[in-house]
Length: 109
Image 1 (cartoon, rainbow, N blue to C red):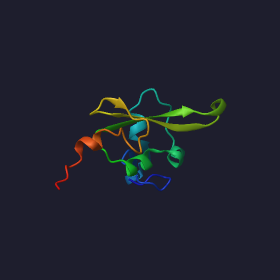
Image 2 (image 1 turned 90 degrees about the vertical axis):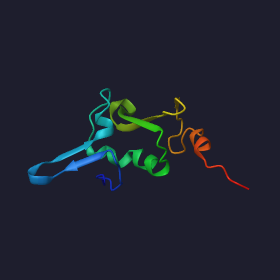
Image 3 (image 1 turned 45 degrees about the vertical axis):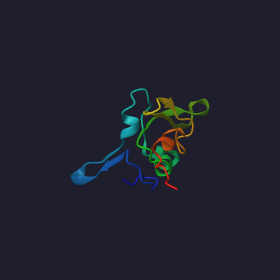
Image 4 (image 1 turned 60 degrees about the vertical axis):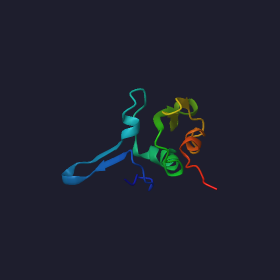
């Protein structure tokens, strides 16, 4: 679904049918330790870019709202793990680096 920032994100949901005005980020809402989500967070959220760059089915992402400088600003922080290799993914746009080598088709010469 298209976010208020104009990006496609599978975790964003909105419903304006029959007087409902629902907007939510289902990724941030499932994290109980996160701060409250606002539609303005979509503008700087890295998740749509990560999902566009890396479609690895074994990568699991989590996100939360973190306070910035002196608590005046808020930003979305992402944590990713590889469920196949059971390791933290340092750069979610690229992946863990192991799964793609394991799943690559062998070339016949």
